[in-house]
Image (tube, rainbow over all chains, first blue to last red; front, side, top):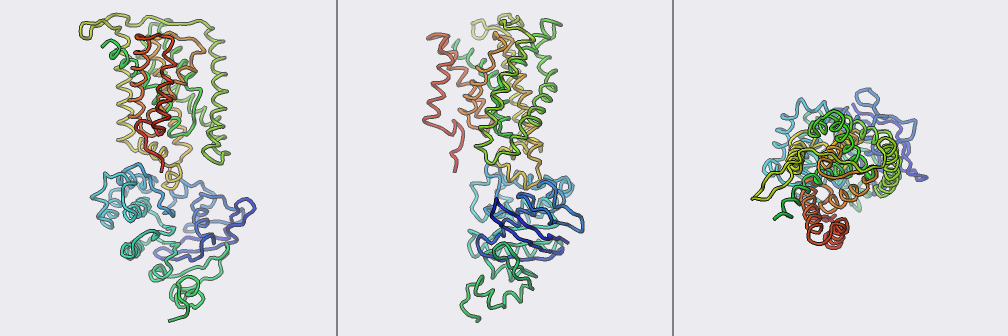
Length: 239
Length: 288
């Protein structure tokens, strides 16, 4: 069980996040919807320890507080982030990227199994293991990014706009892959502009506006909500 | 032919000192202007043990490596890390670290002047001739070259075949992505800085077997190492190694064909040409 409680972040005088609380259970997929600049990426970075949180909030994994730890310790406890724009090691090979994913001590024992699992999920990466990451196609780079995160044997996987820049076919494949990742009891927090497909695989969803949570419901209810449809699903009126 | 062989032999030792600087700049992102002083300290160490207790510099450079590592590690941990922590951007850090290490270089020069005085020093180690294609060369140059080559190959293999080496390369490629996969970037940077310092000190020890030193000569070696690293590209030690040979050959050619006083000037001409026509370095990749 992942719990982020009362997370607030300020960039200088600009309040980017205000009192955001999110929970994700093991094996659950949770979508976070929000417009550009609503604070979605900031939230993920705050959880990963990459931006400073205001005092008063906290992040806990299975009841243990990890909010104050430095980024590498947070990964060590089992939270992995796939950032927007993938954030690969551009000049390193596919296999080096994946090996680095298994950097946390906790992940090393199961490194070879995890590698097998990742290559099983993305067979094309097995063929390209010696290729330098920046020479891959966008879809393949996304696979490396997700694969690298999975190599850390996370309990909680956070993805920031993973479908950005992918063809519709690859998108569908990506979401199918996430559904398979969940079967390993990994909690998934999915920040997506592709609200339709993410709500289709998600169990629950949060709405984020101007740095605040403005709604929380089951994914099915959110998908049926006319205001959500108007804002995020591109529907003028309910079908 | 003479020029070629002496140039290559000189390039070997240059490669070692440049690779040291490159680890510090490429991984820890500290442009260490006190690098040359560490090199001179290494030369003093080799000199001291050789003249005082007849210890071969080849043993000394390995013997004092842990000391050099610890000293440089401490420089990063206590002097540089506070700058890294408060800097808002890479450019900001670069200015801060250049100023701080520039200051540090004066402190180190002062300490060495106080300890060893301002005289030039040299010693004769393996000053016996050996023949390459009928021409005699000094053995110490060949031994220093072979030693440096072994160090460079060893370092390259370590960087490319071990998890720790991969970790340092990862930090060099992207500190941000490194943090995300759980690498302690500050720890890895301190390790790279210490290792780079130990390698530079070893390079100084090897150079001292055939060059003349004094306490304040470090800045010249800092500049040479800087030229090599920028010429070779920041991310790959192979680039530095090739660039070191380019510099060694250029200096030797200019010194023997034109005038020994022009060696440093020649190095800078090559440097400026590279900056003008290949700013990313001979083997560097253009930033995207």
